Length: 260
Image 1 (cartoon, rainbow, N blue to C red):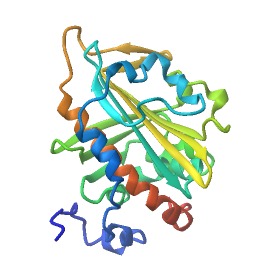
Image 2 (image 1 turned 135 degrees about the vertical axis):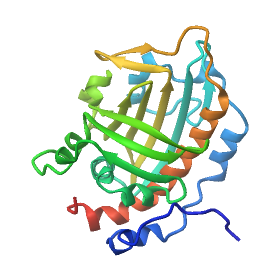
Image 3 (image 1 turned 180 degrees about the vertical axis):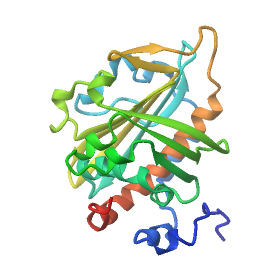
Image 4 (image 1 turned 120 degrees about the horizontal axis):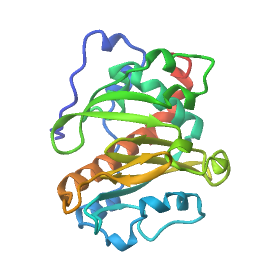
């Protein structure tokens, strides 16, 4: 018997067209990916350094595409790879423009861990004259979720990939469909690459770093080392939520794409 509990929703939520997705069980992530995290941290020498983030545009794969570790300078690193059949870069951008406008939208992404997410720039997200990307670039989402260490408030500042130091000339090519990225006390990168039959998501988190004027700066104080446990928890959560989103997006996008 599955004892996992879902995030509670309101009676009003039950009237919404996408409530049906809340009723579905979470998609089980690939066991080998979970085991890779549970086996312990990867060798930091095999992590992609934040200053080399444009190497994500290179063809092929790095030796470690799934894992976490504490880097020699004490900062944290997380990597994940999720295949998303039937998904496009457009769907992925739409999702980040769309889900911050109603808490249930965030909850159906991961109905066991996502309580709410609210865009602070709803007017921008609703602007039909903007592209899906422009609707979430330079917006802030106030999020309440459990990434494995108990429910907590998280602030995500979504940014234009160009402002984060990514080579935007390669976005929209066979090397990359889109990049959803965030900045703050950590650099978040969801790099979408087209593959046969869909896309693949290559996630990177560089914890203890921020970007200013396209350059990454370490904000973790010297001599401080991030604990491994929160990195491990976030890596497991990332696998879980994006495995579920991979199954959700091809079904919800045709139905809700114009329902802002």
